[in-house]
Image 1 (spheres, rainbow, N blue to C red):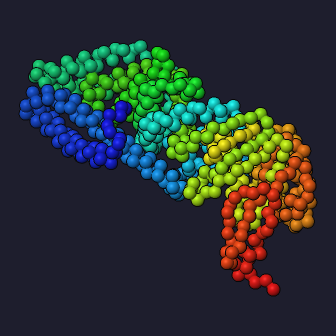
Image 2 (cartoon, rainbow, N blue to C red; image 1 turned 120 degrees about the horizontal axis):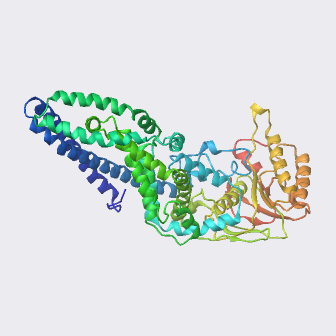
Image 3 (cartoon, rainbow, N blue to C red; image 1 turned 90 degrees about the vertical axis):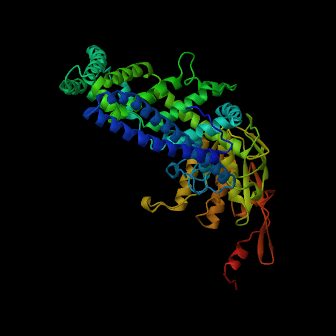
Length: 584
């Protein structure tokens, strides 16, 4: 499908298209009744009128195709308008209407459950521009994949180049939103492709005989050279002849993807064939679609036509032509030729389109957010960020922070009063690590990082079904971290309110033991705690950071700014007073 209309004012174009569709609907209805009149009068009184049936049928088919084209245009324009509305919602962080990806939440994953990657007001809602089930799943898996600096660097340049191709991004997503609505599983289609050739050499005889004999008998009856009985006999013979190819055509019709699926793939292929890329990663992704002597768009457009023919055999006009000229044989021959030519390509194309959906999602996100910071990946185990922000918080209300964990330091002990920003900061660091691993720019002015694997323990809840307490759940997460650390893997961990489920004495002793154990490994990270006693102890590799709060006129004020050193005061006592707890 070619885009030949103005997208600067899609609302105006949509209104104009609606009027054209209404006019075509009336024209098609009038022509249909005219066709019926020609058939009835021609058979009963003036047979020469039946000659008008064929040109009128061709005109009727043209009107149908024109109507379908305009309906496609209408659907595309609606999708464009929806995409622009979605962009505004994402910019204002109003994400309630977007797909949450709830089924991708995995409590056992090293970090996804703690960083709001999925669920309500999640990163998935910001990133996801995919339109198919497979593309959606692929994006979710990419978000949960382990950190790889090599892959991230390769993808970063590709995303940057793709993000400036605004028309391509808009058209790609709009085609999918317009047509890929009732997606049909393609397992049956791939199985059908693998079936043996259903065309037999003996079918060439009816392929040639059908149109020739049908045209001769119909002409002879119309000119009065033979009795109409011969036409009835011919239709009976047609019924027998067509029954030979009925079963393979029904099997093909049942296996075919939905019309919208093929239409979307065709449009995507055309889009990609009309683009040239400089980045080698994008060129590689484009190769399966755009080979030297084999274009996916040509094959997919042919499949779209074959699919339309085989799935609309019950259409009245088709049935008339089929019984007269045995069109089914032509349809089956073209299907089998297509199958032989494309058997090794079609599955590869779908996988390629799934990857392109991920790339379009990431590039569209980069374009919308206008982030430009390039990640500096280093071999040393260090993390240094400047003015880092949380992606899910509006820039106007988000306080950026600087943070540095150099080679000589192992653990940041983060203290601070309630609601001062400790957990949010830790999620800010973790979420940006996910973004840069995807190949995206971080929400920061500077980002220098070693090739760490991310691990979090922040949302540990009890599980009544498994008789697991929240404290035991946290211990299980910590054990998972220690198992990884013992393998000398460079982990970056985020542990929030460590060992909060036990008494103060055991918590402090256990926290100190864990800190010493982690400091002796290759791992680094941030541990938040309310136990200020830990900050007073001289622990190896530990550096203190904190968030502060002030109390003024019975109000607790926060600046959400990370500061070096332990927190000098806490606000739990004041918070309890404000909530109505009276101290004696």
